[in-house]
Length: 560
Image (tube, rainbow, N blue to C red; front, side):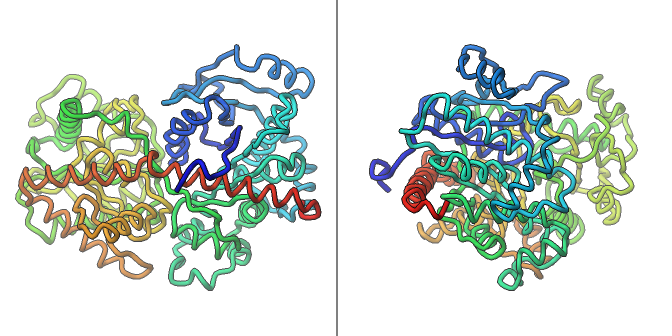
């Protein structure tokens, strides 16, 4: 693809709830993509996020009162907008507008009425986070309009890019009131598709028979589905992150994405060479030390360390499959080395375990300790109803010294200050031997993607966008890359998937040091083909599509 042959925007506004607000995978998409866009746009790139950090400073935001002082003063005094301007504390340090939106809540009924009259958005049965999300989206659009008009950007090519249903109101407002701006909308996972999967309905077998509107009524998802569908159908360019989600969007939102924009990764911060080896040794030391202190006995230093991670979506993320596969490895197969399986999934916690903290702090000899409940590192608010803990207990794990396979639940965000590990997730990920992500619903799959970027072999499924991409890559290049094991998964082969994961882990436990090193090299080679240097071109194509379609739209005013 020749970049110079495409139309490219002079200015880009991109809005998301996860700008300077780390919630999930979208934060990784935007924060890693930003460096590539910033290099090309040179401060004509503006991210917009919610200003919701009130009790403590936002760790990802660096305020800069010298930026756009004239517009900031005008927007505050003449438009009553509450905006903070600064830079995102990530590679590239792009400009960020953080906006407060609570003042718009009193006008929500008027805004929803307009959205119904103009676009047919049905908000009548909204609940939960719908109001807050939509008012942030509305505020975002007002900010874009204000900046656009104040600096007279009409002669330029301008893109306004909105992420997820939560920003749909913003995209529709811009189309209505600032039609010269080309609009883009990305759905990273359809709200109704996620809900179908999460409610244990067979998403894939029946995908071509599902009606999105009907399922939204059945699952009480009308408002979110309506804004997502109407936004997808009205923007100049609609994108999603994988082929599997494109199929889902086409059926449930009734618009085929114009461009599939796979999620890249910014690998510049990954330790290299000797630094990588040292980081891996340190990570393994931390993981084994915590495990030993928790279970009360020593663990072999060459133990096989495996993990799953991500959101606490028990079925969708395949947490259930992971635990069952580890149990099968424990009960049905003879493993010659210690295996420690970590479930790194944030749950509802009440801080770190005090007894474990004390033992770690005093470096107590593990042979003299005996902690109750040696399966979890943090206190859970509702342990009796926790699905992970219940399954561990049901399957009869003991974590005793006479069992080779142990399982440990880490229900805290690994942000560097969890009270037990006190290092970020990536600083532990690099110490793993294998990661396992047997997802049932996974539009892209940053977790397996991140693993191979850190040279950690991974197991994923054909229901993950990254898994499908890796499988396609292997087919195109006619090579078998052992660093990514892609297991075929559908609506009805749970047991087969579980067994295949257990056998794959068993096989990996028997590999030599030389074999493992070769696989780790393969992981890095694959990751190098899935970074933003390769994937950013899909966004260039999407920008071109948005600008082209907006030109056609403006040439036919009756379509506005």
